[in-house]
Image (cartoon, rainbow, N blue to C red; front, side, top):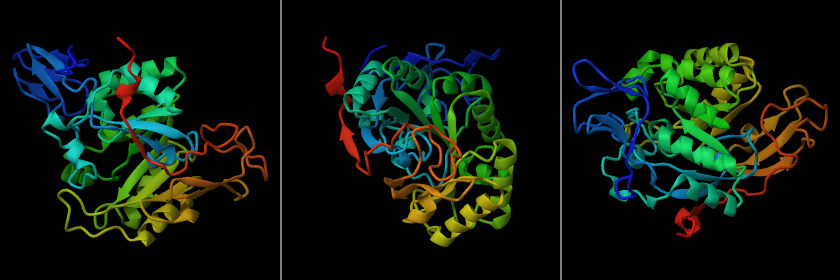
Length: 365
């Protein structure tokens, strides 16, 4: 592999009897002739093999609060080094990162950063974790897994921000190297996934169940609530009932506001009351932790003890403003453990956003 191309042989593919190379990474199962790319655009057929074309190439690096992923129950208050590449295996008409996920020109990628360089950068800047985000990391699985291995060697944890559109076999490898995941649970109907994302619902449900029941990866979900598409009481209730039944009451659910973007500029923004209604439906369904996003609502952003109702974590946007857990993550009022991954004390990163160039931390040659 050369830094100029960022190309490595991919995993999870086979050659069909007709000579086409079939990608086994995600449910699309793209079948490629020589020189063709999959729908994600970053996996391609080259010299009768499947390759990943963005290994080591990023669209940018930034230190964020972990709450921005959003993860409210995973090392609260700590900084996370976030990065992504380009491309996506879904075609969401409302994509909020469309300039990255829909990229068909790699010239805008910031440059080369090896897995070891990223791990060094995270360690040197005091980040507790590295997040694969901005575009979906399942499509750069080889790069993400290698980076996760390098991070774990230095005690840095890893986070996947993903739509969960991945086949079961590669999912086993991918999540085995992730410490936390926020899955974009886009809606709860096949119609939604097919019409707005050209995908299917069932693979996402299977992925959520795999993460929760077959891995040690901490799981939270996010639903972008879009007026007229996935905001009805019936759909929200069905989603929350399924989550309670299949994943359990401790999986935090985030309901975020839609803003017109990409190919859905004519759809209105989500009213804040809709998000509060979604949160209320989740709580009524038996979910212990539900939040709103993309709007300012400290009450709905905060975490409460599910036993006594004590506010155990105060949040204002991405900043912690109060903490009432003991050093073992239990409510100071009643002693009930909160679900999640907690340090003995909260982080103090706040709401800062700090772009960095990881190449500053590359090993001397």
